[in-house]
Amino acid sequence: MLANLQVEWFDNIRADLLAGLVVALALIPEAIAFSIIAGVDPRVGLYASFCIAVVIAFVGGRPGMISAATGAMALVMVTLVRDHGLQYLLAATVLTGLLQILAGYLHLGELMRFVSRSVVTGFVNALAILIFMAQLPELTDVTWQVYVLTASGLAIIYLFPRLPGIGKSIPSPLVCIVSLTAVCILAGVDVRTVGDMGDLPNTLPIFLIPNIPLTLETLLIILPYSVALAVVGLLESLMTATIVDDLTDTQSDRNRECKGQGIANVAAGFFGGMAGCAMIGQSIINVKSGGRCRLSTLTAGTVLIIMVVFLDSWLQRIPMAALVAVMIMVSIGTFSWVSVRDLRRNTLSSNIVMISTVIVVVATHNLAIGVFVGVLLASLFFAHKIGRFMVVKSEFDPERGARTYRVVGQVFFASSEQFIGAFDFKEAVERVIIDLSYAHFWDVTSVAALDKVVIKFRREGAEVTIHGMNAATETVVDKFGIHNDPSEVEKLMGSH
Image 1 (cartoon, rainbow, N blue to C red):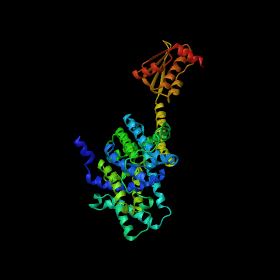
Image 2 (cartoon, rainbow, N blue to C red):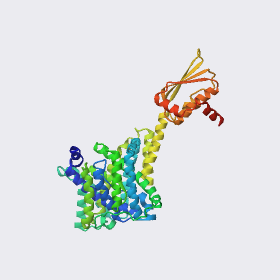
Image 3 (cartoon, one colour):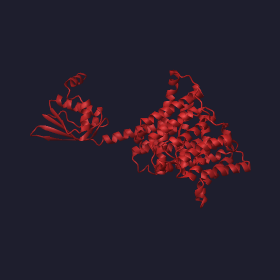
Image 4 (cartoon, one colour):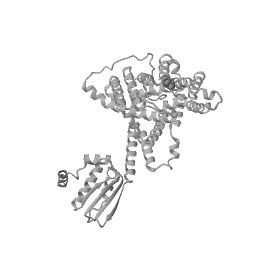
């Protein structure tokens, strides 16, 4: 246990502390912006980011991943806040957390196994595009100084690591933020700053219980929003965990992550914050800055609240151009450029899944809808591909007057029509043998197809024998098949 504690918390102290500081600076304008999107006071997003980051550092399933208030979650909250107000949002946040904890105990995190690599790649590319698009308002209708600062910030971010010695010891995004802030203060450059985004809180969050009536009507109001928030939050968190797994060559605990996100959201709701989840942009900033352990996440949340409450006069002077440069770096680093190169090598179905996921996410700004479309398309393509591998071979034995059909492959809803079409019901034979030694029947549709074949042959006067079923096929056929039940066959025939 002590060895595990050392690995998860204290194996990378210096880099984790510096990475956490960079992430804290990047979290502040994001949290304020997401609060504005949701229609609530900036402190709601800032308190949420603090609570979620600190709590998830202890209970999350992925060390080094950053969780806080996010845009994907904020979009779901807009209608609830507009129609019912902040107190209902806080209650919905608590309920969201409880649903996510339940999902963790139900092991729903394992469902990520069914999300294909093409969907993950599409999700990542769409998120990179959304991150870049979110910076465009800060680069539209602004003075030339903003463009110079942004370009200078990008130059610092990409060139500073090339300096011998010091380049690898200090995260370049931190150097970018500090240096551009110093330039703006010393030179008196008049550009948009963090302070222009909204008032920062001047007190620590306090425990409070949402002031709402505890009635069934209230539950019916917040439940749909909580379900949507729970689904979006878990999808984004588990996707982000998968990406950080790849970046760090380590493994996360998905079910623990579900529970951890739930506990963090419950805490946020009781401390005046909105629901949140893992943030791919900030998680990548953390990893690229050297953060690997839970200490980096704890540092990000702790430094965030310290800066917001006690150093707000300095914090408000950070130019937005510096943070825009950092987020553009995140966007460039997030996008899977290899996926563009591999479009020629990948199968058409994989490309369609990836591109469709990107288009839907960017068009709707809803990660859950995009992932759902991607998973649905991937499943349909997979079913179509597997269905094509099913074949039925036949041979006739004139001495016995018997036709043997040998079924090879997977028989399920996608291949059931092909299965039926492989039999010649008009052939005059005394006996039909269906050999299933090399076949597997998966579902009710495939069993219904087998029933139809047997009944059609018997109706034509042939004796039908089935043999070679494996144990799993025999179980599903015994449970759902009706071809050996005269009363059910009669009902079926009578319905035509």
